[in-house]
Length: 330
Length: 161
Image (cartoon, rainbow over all chains, first blue to last red; front, side, top):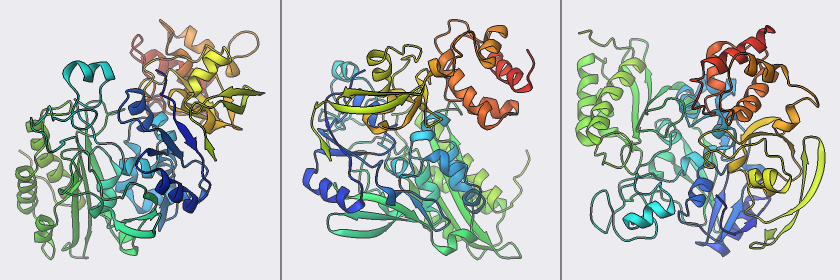
């Protein structure tokens, strides 16, 4: 498959990048690793006439316990021993993104902004044309939930939930300067599968920053997919916790991706366990509440009912494991 | 900085140790450049979407998907293809093991597997079986069922036929 012609820009600094983006917006895409963008371009999905390559912007590199550059490859992140011992959940998620070959190119920033996915969107041009185009590309109606207002494409990044539970922030640069946005508020229910995050069109993620408290938390990531060697998440559960010496919960956060249009935190539910000695009954109650709240739709390979049930199962297993609560044997 | 739409400017690549300058437009994919401009057809086009690993080449020694790499973005880098890891005469130990273990049937995925596994053995000369399986997770084979491929890589690592 050949790509349609575009103009390729190669800025070398963040300032140069965002000033260029400001001039070109919205007729451009950033290209980081290209592992999500180029397949979409090959399928003629929302192709734009300009690509701004981030390859030469050195400020976007570098891994430390405080900061990970947006252009750090997922493969670099998963093999960094110091980072891995500090942030287990993040590394578990990075290591489960697609395949080693994709992770050799795919980046941290790219995974945070990975395109939302839908059975009716991630298809070739002739396939989409034959059915009638959808809201997310070239059309005006949704084939999943028939209406013309909202896109239900699924948030499919693996890293975001694991960063959200650590209260990590993204450093964002734009033509008007820089700002910090908590990963947890980068996406929310106010958007949809098209308006999938709160970055402005010309803004760029420079890096992810970790607060000092993040190093005091234990984290994990549990991912549901058909082929463990490759697929996007059908469900991704990230948890992070800290307990006192007597086992009392000092902090607990939970974020679930792969089900809705955004990775969703459940602070109202997890707060109920803080200050408590965790029991399997309380963990089960939390998992049941999550299962009842999430609303996956029929737009990925696995049935939404199954994904919702598994959300309960994975939340129960992940929270029980992280808090050291034995699951009942039946 | 901006490279004009469809405009073809020269790109300088070092492919299998030979420096080549050739004209290519911004949208040229590395896989197409290798196969169509340099006639290096050992690198295969499978899914063309990053799923199958048939197009695996090395950029600066690291296996990457050439179907998802813009040629202009690897200008000045060292590219190695299956032709570059194959000895001038005969086969590499790993390629020989693929033949001896029946790890190649239709053969279409083989160049990609050889590129991935050669890099694995270079960086980790004694991988365990799970490490081999994990390393080749991005390469699809529809014929062998992988067992023979893993055996061929393991046999090469152990220096046995």
